[in-house]
Image 1 (cartoon, rainbow, N blue to C red):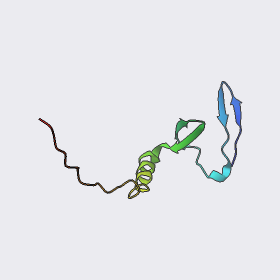
Image 2 (image 1 turned 180 degrees about the horizontal axis):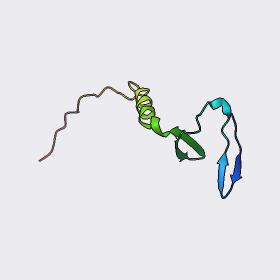
Image 3 (image 1 turned 180 degrees about the vertical axis):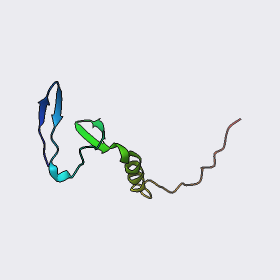
Image 4 (image 1 turned 90 degrees about the vertical axis):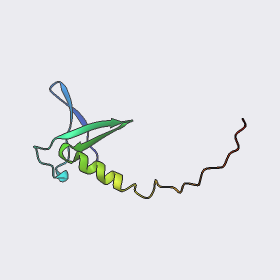
Length: 74
């Protein structure tokens, strides 16, 4: 899906396709990450964070070996 930037008054705007089925009352958080622009519904911000964290469970865990015994010189 692509969209083009256009001038609307003194602002730049992007027309979102109707197929996204967004209501005209939607509010979004906007984040620029490197060269990407990410729109996240404001009312779903925490839900999206929690679902993203859940997708990492188990993948970030590792087994911890026991600490090495060391002889300290006095």
